[in-house]
Image (cartoon, rainbow over all chains, first blue to last red; front, top):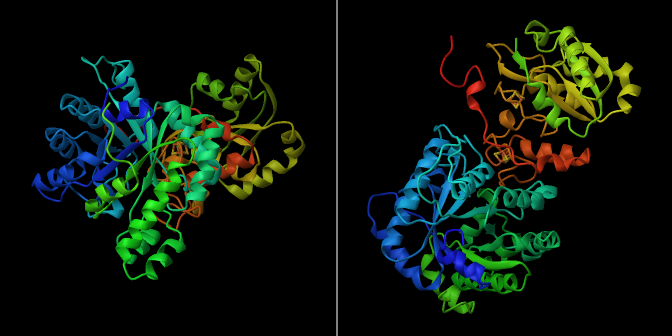
Length: 305
Length: 213
Ligand code: SF4
Ligand code: SF4
């Protein structure tokens, strides 16, 4: 056991894990996080709290995690390298552990120019792989990057993101191998729409035996409107939405129903791919649909371990 | 004027591990002025490498290694010698290493750290790609700089947002990591990217850390 979190126990027991995501509000009210948390509570094993995603200022990830913890919901704290140097990162980790957070997802972070403060200085003191390695060192050696001792345990279950579609092609699998070498415990992938392409990547991953060294959770996004599909296709870095998905949604009357259908089909296919240990549902602006998705995908009730 | 200083020889030997035949390149421009890559330093480096059991199969000094066309031309007489090696060690600023790297199909290793441009520029103006970070990583990245050319200065590989070879931050520019992976694939040396590069020392650049002057 690394941190003994629910997510870690589920994955270690070989169960198919389900995680979802909550974006904190652009304001001070705890209600948004609490409401989404309650909604997702019984259908997921842990909930990611995003860290100023797309570089737009929101309530901090650590606070969102605490709000979930208070409701007995397990959070995954997302942490980007964009806004903190190594001092702030380590300090935030100490605080997060003190506040009962055990899952951390290491990300490089969207560049400031994408967000609402495009003139901000991007920090990028360390990169996401160095962040993984740093958290592992804090957990296993109980030492800061400087080598100085940390008092107390740092039980962390360390996650990272991976994009099976990202260029350059030759480097997709080696990059995962590098994250594993740095010490990652679980991966949540970018949204999967093109299942064949994802399956090809997973084949490379399993051929190298990497699925035995890390838990891979495949990301899915239910698309609510045709516009959202198009927007993600054209504007969101790293997300790869095939034309076919957009056309399918354009051609039907009940767009939401079709979006749900596409998502469920994707999950069904993903479940059959060797080496996939769970799904991560990123229902941006459509959290209400997550319980239905999990139920219809036959993944309820969530196991208690 | 680019200010560079030689890397510790231990570091150079660490990344030259496995490379036995080395071709040395020095520079009669800034690197000579700063005594990091002029003739005496090239000769000294030759001796140090030979003392460690490496074969220095040749060396040359180019007036301005950061001038791409000049470097290409000056290497022509050495083509045969260069066929006998996969590794060049370049005692210049980061721009010089990258300029040289762009004209040979081999790995070009940096022998120096570039710590300042003192407000000046290298000769390869349309492609000046060194941020004078003071802790040169070109040895691992096929002679293409991820510090200056990757929007997020990632040391350990691409951020995952690049599409069609372009940087997610500015689709008008190449993704540096795409170029790095492409080059190392071409050289058959993707293994260079396996090692996890530790966090950088940002304080060794003359423009990093507290003011010194
Ligand atoms: S890593 Fe890049 S910025 Fe740093 S010295 Fe080398 S070429 Fe210059
Ligand atoms: S797309 Fe490439 S150059 Fe741009 S930030 Fe990502 S890795 Fe760096």
